[in-house]
Length: 327
Picture 1 (cartoon, one colour):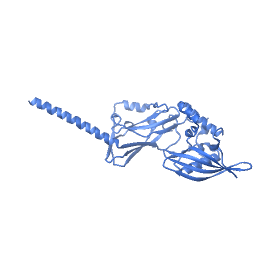
Picture 2 (cartoon, helix red, strand yellow; picture 1 turned 60 degrees about the vertical axis):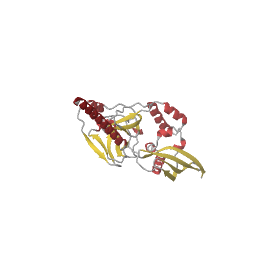
Picture 3 (spheres, rainbow, N blue to C red; picture 1 turned 45 degrees about the horizontal axis):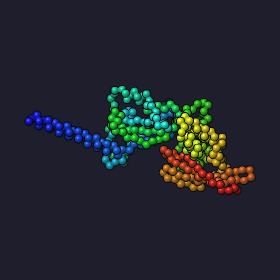
Picture 4 (spheres, rainbow, N blue to C red; picture 1 turned 90 degrees about the vertical axis):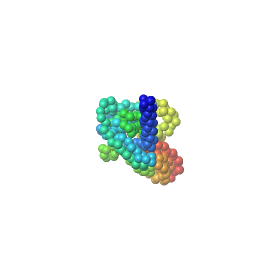
């Protein structure tokens, strides 16, 4: 009788532990389901393959509590045990991890971490170098994503995926290619796009064209979207490999610089006046009156530049032109 009673108690005890474990895991899942993880470029510049020290890809990681309860999670001192970056090619294959990441994660070692708590509505953020995690050897356009492990990397049953960023890796500069690098006029510092308003973006772009400063002209232009405005080019671009796409983009820029295509966008106005600007948080239009001087007359046109915001930077991605007559 005693043995039977003991067996019954043992079974109920194990069942209770299992139920408690299940409830705990469910609670944890519910807590983490209220966590939002987002990434954005911290100090956007020109990115090239390799060389993580001289040409890092810094990304700002933000963990936000969108729930009504305190969000608790573990964060490793070495963040390779708390998160992972993935870079996808156009064909949806992923780039490999760096040797440093592989060695660390395959070696038995003590992982030191802190337990953090974020109150509702609060955000915890930090900056990571993507090249510490991913080996980037070829120029191309990649799609960057991060996954966060609130119970550390070895407990990957719980992970939170971030938003995706478009990562443009350009061919490594060389002596023969130095002329295409975006360099500030009369300085030796690399140009970087700034978080300026749409009208300022258009104004700087037109002014750069007037002065034939091609690097500044392309600085706020979404070359890819401008190129695929042509339906035939768009079809070829979608079916092309990553290397072929990169060559198409470079060829398109070269044709623009030689005034072979899209004559309206590369025409040089004698003067211009911004007529109207309207935009939301992500999209907008800038209307500009431009005058083009010829030997016996001046031509007046209205340009409508379409702009959109990516990672805090406004870019021109489309335009239309209306002839307003001559003067």
